[in-house]
Image (cartoon, rainbow, N blue to C red; front, side, top):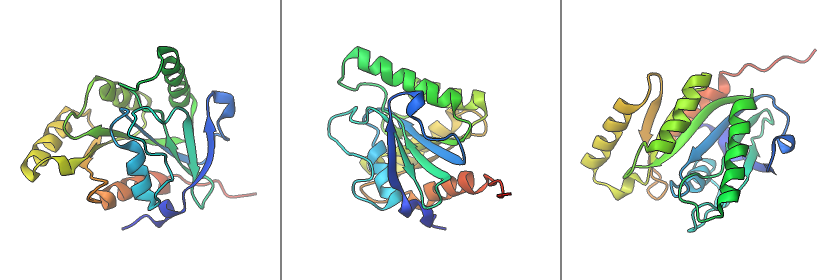
Length: 204
């Protein structure tokens, strides 16, 4: 079932430090991945918007933690800075790392982590670290193997199988192609599962 709330995503705020984060309430799902994993394209596709997240041919364009609110303001998507081979100064990368760590360690609203990986190079060391962190904190993690159109169907299945075998127990994985618009319903269902399981406290 298509999760129509995703179509209502709107930019809320970009944060460079903990004190800039919006109120820690409701349900947030964060998107993480290497700088060239296609994270921005994935966010734009599932929101059915061309420029919700900024897409660039230069890895590392997302330099801040970007929050996108849905029609229900207690539901948010969060775009984390890409990690890996971003062509930026080391000091800036260090700041990104601190911001991501602060977000992951402090946000009580975080209910799920989507880790995007290029299907041709899945589950690298940094991906393992991100998913390992999620597991240690009890946050569900879902691996999305992007750019699946770059491989044959048989190669796709092999990459997915190997990733599923390598993931910690309880973590899930899928194939995804922004270009071919494949894997969208599966990802929508995962986001819906995480977001709608969060019970909202009734007003007094």
